[in-house]
Length: 406
Image (cartoon, rainbow, N blue to C red):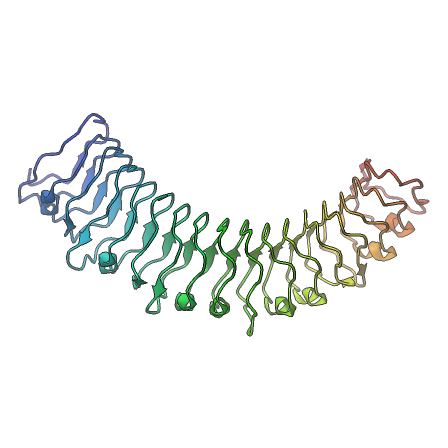
């Protein structure tokens, strides 16, 4: 069928074998075999010289592809959900057309070094490839924009032998990665680096600080991660840093070099104190410290005027809240529930925009400062379970916005 452009067999889920393809089908652009029971592709698939889109999604019986791939017009190749596929074939010659390769959920164990011949590949998805343990020794796919390795068994990330300016998103979360190569700085335009729940990861290379375009760095659940590398130069592009659930104990003075940081999540970490230099994060809007059981020493004062949400709930070692030396209009919610806080500073009235104050189960809290009544924006004040709290301060001014008092 020389004029055929689209061939859709996706509904024929009982199809087990595809016939040999004779030469001459140059017009076929889209071939869909998804959800079929096909077990292998013939070598003659390469005769589809004009093929742009090949979809084999959820072909759970598929065990092998042809020994080599030479379809130079191919743009998308979907093998996601092919849970019996164990090997990806060698790539014969440079394939300039392929832009997207999806191997999500396959049983592939390794990628051939010839993967680097996919010179225009933009999206490479290897998420939930539980058998994947290694990649080629080096990566030099210069067009790559998104590389997803989440949920793999990968223990080592390869060297990045050349500068790759295109890669913007790298996801290695839930893998067994132990370290990143020093050459990570060759990903010069990397914006999102996801290392969540890499439970074997202990540290990052110092070169991570050279990633000037990095916007989001996530290390949530990296239970062995203890030390963040020293930052020698400003990382003004970083907006979000997630260190929740890590074993990090302190934030060194380097924190002040993250001048553009808007969200800092340290919840559930082993942080013991916060340096006063955290006040230099003038754009910080979210500071999460909930469930930091070891936290004893906050900075002596708070001056972060952009702060909107501050969570210190269940910080069971925290006994004192710092002074608020300047007016902070932006803070809307302050959660100190479950802490050992004994009192609030009289300067609490400098939180002029505060709407919600949660002090539930602060069992050491005995009283509130009279200045609490100057918080004109306060909508809810929660004191449930404060077993030592006896006297509410005298209200000298109207608190007309207060709706909930527990």
